[in-house]
Length: 222
Image (cartoon, rainbow, N blue to C red; front, side):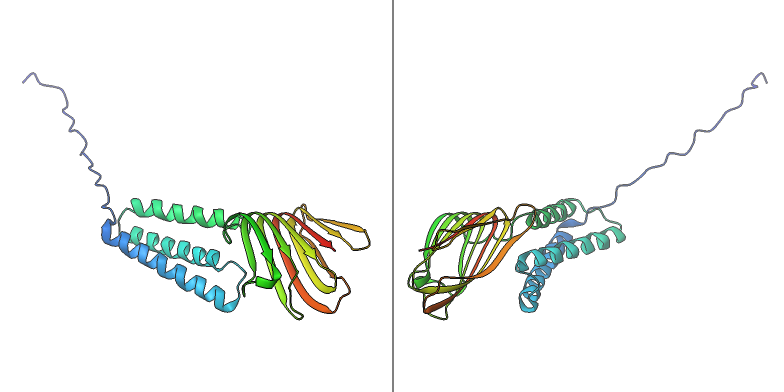
């Protein structure tokens, strides 16, 4: 008697348990899957000639494989943890690669002096820097390839040579000084500047393919 209040029971306590991490085994499997996808993608891009940067195609395949692994880990009720960070890092690397000029990662950095007489089978390549290419010593029927990612490429055409030239500039200027003193300028800023023409009138017939992604190409007839 004398007790008139109503006693209210406290609500049940809800305990939320954190999902377990994927663990070292999941990390190992994800890394292995990404590496295998990179190798297969780069090899397929090279074999099928899918662009001139098979490593980027391989990176895209690796990102896709890592993303697939993350989905599977989530469906199994586990947290990605460090695996998610690695997948983001891989995706950022792929994105940075697509924004980088094609020749940037190949050929090293610095200054180069090239001679057509000692041209390697795969052509001359420089990632970042300035290069000078002399066509002296080129053999008739020879095809010479020279590319610079970021920088300048200067080419000299000697007398007695006829050069079928294809020159491309992604962003920059393409300058040609003819033997008669005429100057020709093609701008590649905002658009890829390309010229295809025959230079010289000699008996030695040479084909030249020159490319600069960001910078200038200068060709001078002697």
